[in-house]
Amino acid sequence: MDRTAQLIARPTQGGIAYDPAVEAQSLHARAARVLEDNWTGASTVPSRGLYPHQWSWDSAFIAIGLRHLSPLRAQTELETLLDAQWGDGRIPHIVFNPSVPLDAYFPSPDFWRSSTAGRAAGAPRTVQTSGIVQPPVHALAAWLVHCADPGLSRARGFLTRVYPRLAAWHRYLLHRRDLGGGGLASVVHPWEQGMDNSPCWDAPLTRITPAPARSFRRADLDHGAPEDRPTDLDYGRYVRLATDYRDAEYADGRGEFAVEDPSFNALLIASEHALARIAHELGATGTARHARAERLTTALLDRLWDPARGMFFCRDVRSGDLVPERSVSGLIPLLLPTLPREVTAALVRTTRGPHFGLGTSTRLVPSYDLLGEAFDPHRYWRGPAWFNTAWLLERGLRTHGERPLAEGLREAVLELADTSGFAEYVDPYTGEACGTADFGWTAALTLDLLHDEGLSDGPGRSEETVPVPCR
Image 1 (cartoon, one colour):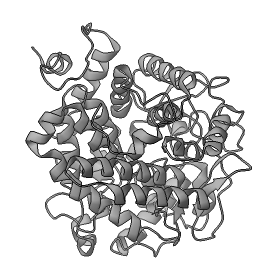
Image 2 (tube, rainbow, N blue to C red):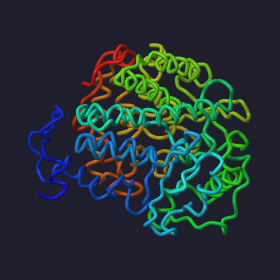
Image 3 (spheres, rainbow, N blue to C red):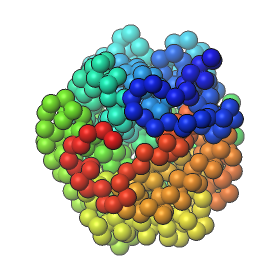
Image 4 (cartoon, rainbow, N blue to C red):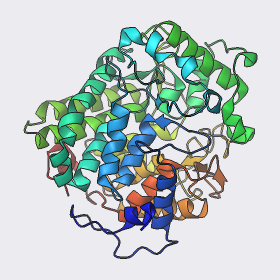
C-alpha cells in the first residue's frame, strides 16, 4: 500500500466517521494526494514551487484537514511549527527549510537574520525563521486536532506540551502587540495579517518609503503571473517595513505601520476559547481564558465595529482612524459565538449584500468589496476569493444558525476546489483558478468540509463558551 493509500484508509481507532469507501480519483483522494506531495517529513509546504517552506497559519489550517487523514501527522505539523517559537512567545510566519536554495524564495533567511537580529527577542539558534508573525489560528487547530483522536493525543501528551507554548504566543500578542492601548493586537506588517496586499493597507502604507526595486529580486514572479501578484511598489514597501523591523532587532512599537485588524483579532479570540477548552481537558477550569475572550470581543466591538456599514473595519493605530475599506477581514468575526445578535444579523446581511454578493453574484466571498475602486478579481487579496476565509465564514454561519447559507458556501468550496485543481485562490464570480495549483490549505480545508463535522445549527453560544468534550 502506498503512502497516500495509507492516509485515506479507514482508521481502526479514534472514533472518526470516515468515508466508507474512497475511490481512487475522488475529491477526497486527490486532496489527500496534494497534502502527501507537499509533505516534507515534518511539515507541509503550501506549494512546492511558490512557497517552499513552512508557513505559520497555513500549517494551522493544514493540520485541521490532516486530522482526518492522520491525527499523528496533524500533531507533528503543529509541533514542528512550535519548535521554532521565539523566546518572547512569537510564532514566526515562516520556518525555513535549510535544504531549499536561498534564491527559491524572497525574503530568504539571509534577509531576516533571525538568529542574530532576533537574539534579544529569543529567536532560536538552530533554525532560521522570519521575524514577523501571522494570524493566531493555532490553538483552535490544536483543539480540533486533539478531538480527531483524543486517545492518541493523551498518550503522546500533545496538549500538555503545546498548551504552554500557545499560552506564551497569546501573551506576546496581548501584551507586546497592544500598540493602540485598547486591548487588541496590532499587526506591524501587511504580511502578518495574511491578506498581504489588501486595499486596507494602502493608506497606512503611504507613510512608508519603498525600498529600491534594484535592492531585491521577487522570486514569486517565477511562479505566478504578475497580474495576479502584488505590484512592485507594494513589494518595495513590504521590504522596507521588514528591513526596518529587522534592523530594530524586532522590537515592537517603533514602526510607522501598526494596524488593528478584525480577522486577526477574531482568530485570537476564537483561539482563546479553544485554549479554555484545552485547559479544561488538562484539568483546569478555563474560566479566565473565556473571560479574556469576552473582554477581547468587547474591545473588538468598541474599536472596530461600524453599525452604519454593518461590518468591522481595520483601525490605523498611527492615525487613530478606521480604514474605510470593506475587506473579507471585516466579516470573519462572524466566527465568534458571543457577538450580539444584531451584529451577527448585520454581518450576514453584508455578506449577502452588493459589496460581497454571497449567494447572488459571487460563488465564494471575495477578499475585497465588489464595489470598491481597488477591486480586482484576479490580484491576490484585492478581490479574489480564498478557501481559508470561506472555511472560516462557513463555520461562522453555522455557529449563528444560518444553515442554508452555510451549506451553499460549503458546496461552492467543494465544487471550486475540485474544478480549480485546489487553486490558491479563484475569481469570485467565475471560479477561475488564480495563483498556484495544489495549494495546501485548499486541499486540507476541502477534506475538513467533506467530513463536515460541522458546528451546531443554532446560535452555538453554549457550545463555544462552556468547555465540552470532543464531539
